[in-house]
Amino acid sequence: MAAAEKPPSADAPRDAQGAPALHVAIVMDGNGRWAKQRGLPRSLGHRAGVEALKRTVSAASKLGIGSLTVFGFSTENWSRPAAEVAELMALPKRYFETDLARLHREGVRVRVIGRREGLSGELLKLIDDAHARTKDNTAFNLNIAFNYGGQADIVDAARRFAEDVAAGRRAPSDLDEALFAGLLATSGAPPPDLIVRPSGEQRLSNFLLWEAAYAELVFQDVLWPDYGEEHLRAALAEFAARDRRYGAIVADDVLAAG
Ligand code: IPE
Ligand code: MG
Image 1: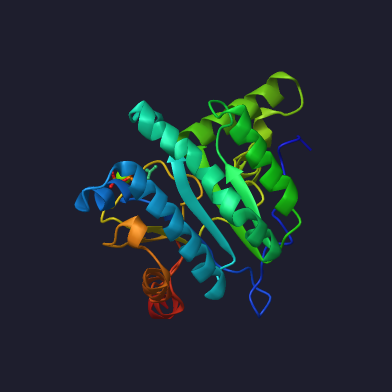
Image 2: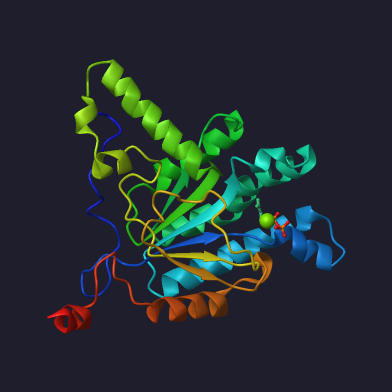
C-alpha cells in the first residue's frame, strides 16, 4: 500500500444508532464586511471571526454533528495585502492558545489540512503539536483548512500518484476514485454531508472540490462574525428537508416506472 493511502477511518464519531455522525463544512466568510459595517479595521473582523468559530464548534458538538471542517485561509488569500495576510497567519496561534487545551479536554481531534509550504516554522510547530496532542480523541473532529485550495490539493494528489507510478510502486490502472480520495488532504474522513456558506455569496471558492460531489449546499445571509448556534440550527433544518438521492431515483419513481 502506498504511504499516503489510508482506509476510511473506523473511529469516526457515530450517532446514537451507530451511524457515522454528520460532517458539516463551513466557508467562514464576511469578516471584512462585518468590520467595514462597524468602521473597524478588517483585522478586528477576523478576530471576531475566531470568536464565531468558538461558538460554532460548541454548537456543532451540542447539535450532534460529528465533524466540522472550516475554511480558514485559502491558497488564493496570499494575494491580500501583506498586513492582512500576517493577521490571518496569526489567527491559528490566537485560537490554539486560548482553546486547544479545552478542545483536547472535550475530546476534539484537531487537524489542519492544506499545504505546509509558505507557513512559518512557528506555525507548523503549533499545527504539529495540535495534531500530536489530539490525534487519539474521538468525540468530535475539527478540521481547519488553512493554506488550502481544492484544486491545489487535487494537483498535489495527482503529483503524488505520478511519483508512485514513476517509482514503480503503482501502475496507472491502479487509480480509481477510492485510491485518489486517499491521496487528498481529507484522506480517511467521510466527505461533507452539508457545506454552508454564510455572507450571502453563493460559490464554493475552491473549497473541498472533490469532496463536495454529493454535499448539500446551504447559503445563509449572515456575516461570519455574527454566526452562532441559531444559524447552524437553521442550516441543519434546511439540510434535513433535502432529498438526498446520490444520482439514483426515489423508490416512488421506481414503482411509477413499473
Ligand atoms: C473571511 O472573511 C476570512 C478569509 C477569507 C480569510 P473575508 O475577509 O473574506 O471577508 P469579506 O468577504 O471581505 O467580507
Ligand atoms: Mg470573503
